[in-house]
Length: 116
Image (spheres, one colour):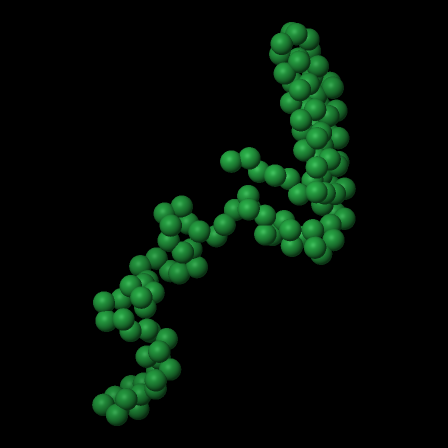
């Protein structure tokens, strides 16, 4: 799946395309363009720094919501915010919720001295 750049990232993408073309040309023609390649890489880094230092609040939101941004899901598909081995209430055999049992307070069968 091709990732579409955000509008303000297009100058970076264009420079990266030029760098790829330069590298291809260097390999095909057996000409050493190492100096030009390094200069282009430096230009890309400078452009990135300039763009990302001057982002507006909306541009930061766009980056945060970008579809190519890494997610917080574990590779195994388990929610990384839940401790390993814990189960959501929907997956527990009795359907109970630990939070609900903590909120309920001590039952009449539980002595007050043992309630946390």
